[in-house]
Length: 331
Figure 1 (cartoon, rainbow, N blue to C red):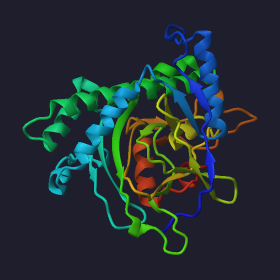
Figure 2 (tube, one colour):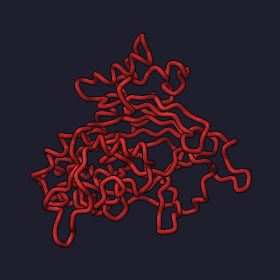
Figure 3 (tube, rainbow, N blue to C red):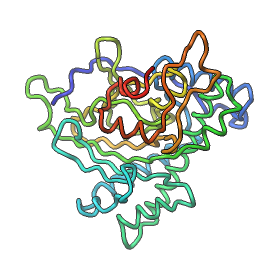
Figure 4 (cartoon, rainbow, N blue to C red):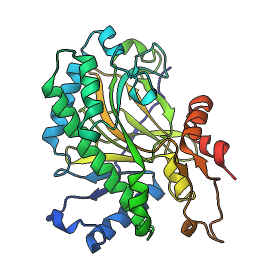
């Protein structure tokens, strides 16, 4: 299946979290609250935002991670298959399949940097039984910095609604899934009639609170815009920024104020596309519910409370469409 033409190029709104003095970006300060308001409004309007974070996740670290990912994806197929743990999709290796819905391969490591990097060490041991200290250090450093950034952004969203007294509890009840993805360049998958690139990852909405992403120099990330279902190619936010995308659990928490955009990845051209990201997830048994401050006469409750693991099961069985949350928990 070929992707429809994506002639429109869009750039995400940008919020600089570095600034001239990082000491000003402290919870509760005017600069923090200013950034929190900008992030909240961007996620309400579009569901995505680029955050300037050169000091938090420096370009040099991202480049090391991309080099390490190339080494990982070059492993033999059987080796890659054994990297997946046996207890769930977040620790699995997703193998490339010859279908339009899955023209990529991916690795996932749950809570890669937590507990001294225990999960990361186990992952590396399965991939390299004799060890690979360089890869391990790069993985834990990148996953750790991106996880911290994702939690900062989640706290900003909560604080942006004037609910700073709830931030710590919400942020503490999260897990992270660090995913490394390779979208295969395969010119045989382009359309013979219009030459448009194939879909490397089918249209979907995210099932995380937030997703924080970066990529190599190969574009392909696309957002659905407008009521007609048009697709727009997202211009890379550049080496100083990471892309943040809101997911449906955060939409439910905000009582529908935030937007989870439909997006996909198109492939084609001369190079593979490498991307990695942290998916910030509610704990599996956490009940996702809008706080009472966000349920008012003017904004009545839109979703029933639900256990996150139940939502995941429904989403995996019922598809990745924009209406998944409404079908599962809509009132």
